[in-house]
Image (cartoon, rainbow, N blue to C red; front, side):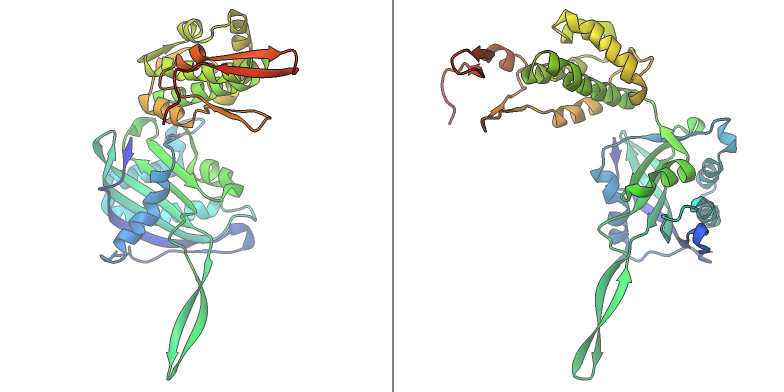
Length: 351
């Protein structure tokens, strides 16, 4: 788990990068920027807030041949080994970003390269290098005092409420490509940022596998369980799936199916669905892996527990007790009305 509360910006270099296809150039600052006490908390909030608000999906630097041929990885590695040289390295990073800025839709902007200390990752203090980019400019008014009057003047600048692009490279797992977090508020050029500049791919650990497998289960419930049975059983399957993950340290697929998928006729459907959809979730050969409690907690928060009926009635099921919905709700068919119904058992109405 990432914690940026105590993180400190120990170094900041600011440059500007243009769009190469439009014959725009880049501008490299001669010296690093010294952040004063007034600006520091504003910049920290600007750089860090998107990562606090975003679910942690770790990436790592990847190269089809070897990481020694990955240009940005080598720059970052040199930066961690020689923090005092980071300003010169930040110039190399900016030039490298410029070389990837070839598509006509890529916007020019400011590039910020930072060296961070006291970043907490799973309660361990680590260093990090941050690369951030501001692209969109916003209008604002400045006012000039002219004798007895105030005269408004229109200017453009960076809005500190929204960072356009950013990457945090954590100084862990160095030999396999570090652990990297990325944000991109402007989705039209994600390939340029993730693939062409950063050159990263998913960090395949227990957190990644748990998230991907539970997402796969969610879509299996929607595409297979619900058409074969009903909305209630779709939600019951997902509730049992999440509870299974929460109560086990390791995942084993055959055990999962026997405990979670009550209808044995759906077992071959599950395997066929996995064969067909697994590449989408990067779980082709995945049947055993350690379970991440963080990923399970995140999945539970997103679980749908409301059945919306076409009669403008909603049934909300509380999954704290996993047996509640199964024991006290029955679905049936009324011949006279030619309608489905839900029968709900209870002792008394709660206040």
